[in-house]
Length: 385
Image (tube, rainbow, N blue to C red; front, side, top):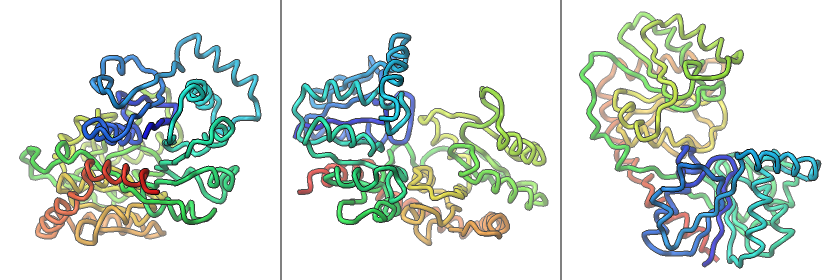
């Protein structure tokens, strides 16, 4: 098939600036390049670092880069905004990207268009083409509360979701179009073979965005409840107020105040390049993913299990689909959440034999989440009649 891939319009593919969706797109594009399944054109925002990327050497994957950041592009975006007011589904910058992509799509003949996490694109695509549309949804982008929900749902031939949780949210509109394709990770990069530093400290690791929804505040509160255990440490990996942010919001200031009470027992790394994540995870004894929102399918859970880490997480969103009772302790985010979080940490701290059993189970369970299985399932789903 001749396929077009419409990306988010924010981060580039190849994923030279990171991004979970963009990395997952790279995984199936690499699989397509090696197995030569389809002729694919990827529509992506331009970025200087993509120009010499090895992925551009493929003769089955092609890349159409759209300038959205130059001075001329910024002027054109503003003009687009003024002439298309009240017609856009997303922010005008994203809609400008789509507008430019459509100019190219009009001149091509595709058998299929795959929309990465932007189901609202379908509203304009259906005006210019009758090509089959498939949505690949990584977040809660479409449910009965979405604008034009029924129209967007009807425009899709099929909807791929990263979790059954997302499929259930779409099911509030209608049922019958969703196929769940669980995400995958690079198991060669994330492996338990990483060297662990010698230490008599018990190290917890949190990785992800440092914001209110990810539950890092509750994790720090739980750490404060365990002050008497001086050898319990916390490593927070991700963007935080220790980076080069332009000022702090109220949450960041509150978090900084809470963290100060722990002094040297908590370390904020700030942003860490994805390639270095295994090295940092290898320093930990337990991974804590305390999301207090319905996290659709966080890859941080998969990465932790692949590193052989026992997991403490929450019973929210798609997280229960990523773990088993043997690999993780799942907690409810009720009024006793912080207490239960402290209790779960203390349980694993005091029972190394339990950690060892969970670690072994995590390594076994992680095998399913290989990026090769993910890419294979992805193409099987889009090829299903």
